[in-house]
Structure formats: C-alpha cells, structure tokens
Length: 377
Image (tube, rainbow, N blue to C red; front, top):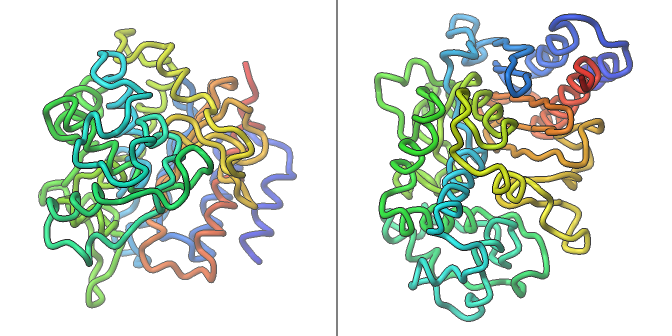
C-alpha cells in the first residue's frame, strides 16, 4: 500500500528537475522491502542523464553501498539480449547464421519429432513451441548431460503458433553461437561485444577477486551468496548459458544501451553490427494473435502482456527491452532516444509481500517518469 501511494504521487506530480522523481520511486522499493539496493541509469545515445546507486548490498546498512560504477549484479535473463542476441546479430551479419535455417543445421543432435520446423528465428521470437523450462539441475549431473536433455526436447505446441517464453530457446541459441563461431558463448561475447564496447566489468563466471563487488542474490545458512549465478540451470551448464549467467554494473549495461541506440556502433563510430540488423532484431516480429506478449528477435517488445507493464505506459511503440528474474531490467525507446536501466537484487531475501509485482510497478513508474522528465528533443 505504501509503495502504491508513493508511485501514484510520483506519476501524477509534475516533473521536477534533477533526480527527485526517480529517487522517490527507487527508494520506495527499498522502504517497502522489495530489494535492499539498486543501481539506476537513464540516458540517451550520447549522454547519461541520471546515474545513481541506492541502498546497500543486503538489508544490513553495514553492507557495502550500491555504486553504478563498481557494483555488479547477476543480470539473469537480461543475458539473453546482451550476450546471446548481440552475438547472433554479429554472426548473422557475417553470414555464419541464417535466421530461417532449422536449428538442426547448427545442432544436428536437435532432431526430435517436430523440431524440423523450429528455426533460429522461432527460437529468437519464442515461437518454437518448446516448454518454458525444465529442471536440468536435477536431471543432469554435468553440463554435457544438461545439453543432451535440451537437445532431446520436442515442441509442446506446433512451432509458429504461440509465444511461449522459454529458457530452452535461449540455451539453444547460445549453443548455436558456440557451433557457428567455433568458440563458447562467453569467449565470443567477450571478444566481439564486451571488449570492443569497453564493457570491462561485464563477465560470465566472475572471479573470486570480484566477489566483494557483487550484490548477493541468495542466502546459504544465513550467509549472503554472491558471484554464483542465481539460476540453477545456468549453474548446471557451468555458469555460461544463452539464458543466464552474465554479471555487470549499471554503467556497463548503460553503455550497451547506448550502443543499441547508436544502431550498432561503438562510441567512436565503428560499426559492430549493421544498422539494418539492429532494426531487424528490435522490431516487433510476432503477430498479436500469437499471444499478449509481443516479441522482437531476442528482445521483448511492447505491449509486454503484463497487467502492470515493466516498460510503463508512455514509451513508444518501437520500444524494446528485457527483464531478469533477479530484479534487473533494460528498456530502450529509440523514438525518444532514451533508455532506463534498473539493476536490483530482488531475489535476495525480499521483505515485500509480492516483491515481483511491486518491482514491475517500480520499473513502469521509472519508465514513465523518464518519459515525462526527458521529453523528446
């Protein structure tokens, strides 16, 4: 109730200069027990408008304070767009992956009943018909066994008929990157995405030296756990998967958002991806008849299909983005030249009654506040 009142006040009040509307929204989430800390970055393709850390790593004020520059968060499913989808854009540009090829062209082991109709494009749009997930961490003893289980999956509905958001799609896409590039997803993404963009704090399987900088996402016998991917299936896959496993700071996710707003070029104007490919991947690619949730290629589009949209109500129809279960999100409105990054560790011992629902309100409130505060130029 308190959180709802605070958000209502923020959304109906006139835009105020500076960070004021954003501070009140993010801090309301801490007070309501949704997350202990958060990193917020709002900007345009060439400018950072707001960059602020809030709260602490845990509910103890003795724990480190959050910094947008140094605190790393487990990005969870935001991995799908930053690492996996971007790697595929590069491979598509290079002619090493074709969107309408069957998945079996790249992964011959993926050849069960009905899988011949599953293309790379259908994995990206979550229209493959595969189930949402499966407990790989329970059913496989190692990463090779986990992948064999994924390769053995068959559609639960005919491919192309419905959007079913599925981690299995992204796991397969990560393996397509591996096969097409002849190097693992984490290596390819580091060499062709993170390093060229100067994303020095973006990493799979962070080293122990980084642990003190990572916001925890779980507890073990009362002790915060940080630096180990929160997703158990990604952990079984060795910490590197197309669906989860990436850690990053708010500042680095913001730099990636600017790369997308610049249509695939780095800060110096060098193209990593063709502008046409960026537009292709970020344009809505599913028909409304396939489900309430709109999908682009790898990216979520609008409408999001949520009762309370994480993208708010004011971002434009070309908006694209993604969210992560741990409490992370990135939304980009190319028409406004505007992005909003919010990284939280909602998964760490939330005190709110409905933390995920409340987090959606906060995400949407921030997007709407940004749209009001930073009107199109």
